Image 1 (cartoon, rainbow, N blue to C red):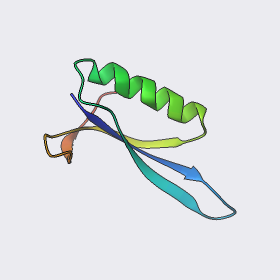
Image 2: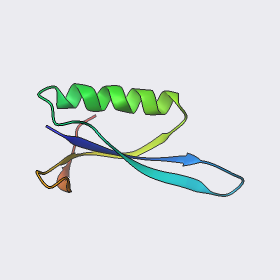
Image 3: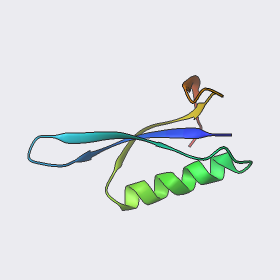
Length: 66
């Protein structure tokens, strides 16, 4: 499974950087997504959404369980 993590981070006085972080397509996709999420939070990112992606890399409608 492959996951996309959408996160934001305050970069200035009133601006935010929004980014998408993708995990590789791995058997342990959920564990990788959890590790990525933990590391992003440690670096000061706010996690907005984590979702599974389809074969084209597009987020599916179903949200990943945290």
